[in-house]
Amino acid sequence: MKVHRFVERIFEPRPKPVDEKVTYEEAALQSKYLGSIPFDYWSPFGFSGGYTHCPGGLTSGQSIYRDTPVYEPDGKPRVDVVTRNIHANAFSVPLFGALGAVGGGGLGYGLGLLLSHLVGLPAGLTAGVSAGVGALGGGLGLAGYAAGDRVRLEWREVPIREKELEGYWESVTPHYEQRCHTTTDSDGKSKTECHTVQNGWNHTFSPDVRYWQVGSYDGPQVVHYQDSSGEWKPTAQVKEETDKPRDP
Amino acid sequence: MKIENVRYQEPVVQRTLIGRKPANQFNDNPSVTRDYVTVGEVLPAGDTSNVWGDVPLKNNDGTPQMRETVASLDLNPRSPLKYGLIAGGIGLAVGALTGLGFASGMGVAQWTGALTGGLVLGTLAGGGAALAVKGDQVKVVWTEHQITDHKLLGYKEFVGPGEKDGRQGYFHRFVPDVQETVIGTYSTPSAKHFKQEARS
Image (cartoon, rainbow over all chains, first blue to last red; front, side, top):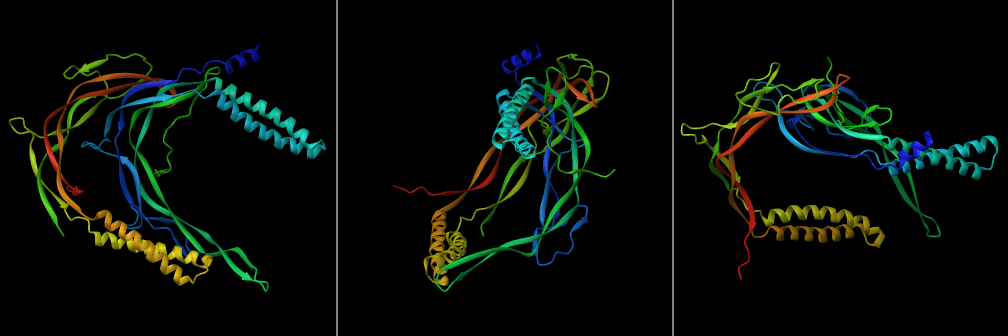
């Protein structure tokens, strides 16, 4: 019965997508210059590296910009009314099925080869059967997962963050070059030989930007969840934060 | 250098507190209390938040206050000599390096390859750039902008499901309804490069 329901679900029409026009207040942001860090450079020496603490950064070098809040005269972050169209679909059963089949088939093939090596079975047959089983299992598994996927629009409190440049890291790595030289033998034939040699060091710099929360707004978020289990699994799409929180 | 200071009038606009509305809430109530509340009605109990808008300052007769501003505009036409030299220099360097690379493969001396490549690409790039800017002229153009006043008329309430601090509930968003009214216009100057059309 369960198998019957599973197969039915895979062939059900795709669930209703989210397609809504929403109005809300969103943080007004501006690109702000936080300071500078040194330019990357090459040097014959591999000294230094590590962390340099310098709040506000240097006065010249690579400029570091981040989106930071705009403030109202009362000191609170500014929010503007915006209207956006939100559109999102549930996961695609054919796409997830194909991905699962490719992944499962590859894994099965590798395991089949390993098994044939350990047990002494014919490699081609074992790997082929194992790849087939893996592809079927992976395809059905991910197709079933996608078939149970639903989407809906939810709301979340989104933090508004102020940022500052606290310092920078210097990373020192060997600089490699390829050097070639051509030799001509007594028959007049040329031969080019290339080899890789280390020539000095690359010094690269990355900013240490810290943030702290100065306010929040309520923003839309598309949420995926499994129909059968009712398990909520937000997958979207809070902007990835690459900076770090400020030390308390 | 021909830098012209062009005077023009622009409105004095201030970020102004134009009213208040209820602060957004998160609770278990899935329904909207009132779709729309106009300014002047009593705000519900609870936190409120300020509504700000860009408001032009006005004279006693209601017209927008203007102030004089000066824009420094560069009205120099692009020089074929300058652009030709810059592009020619870049072309010369790129051509010389390319010629140097191809020289040994073509069986000519390296300096011959570099010189030929540099001269050819330098002349092409320099000549092309000089031709492209030949006949350039500059004029002052004026762009009209609207002066917009902002007034809070009321607020709308929207409700949507969500999660806060690990708890499912409903976000009540109170979105201000701000009326925008055009109360005048003003123009700002900028420099525009153009080429004289050939007369037939």
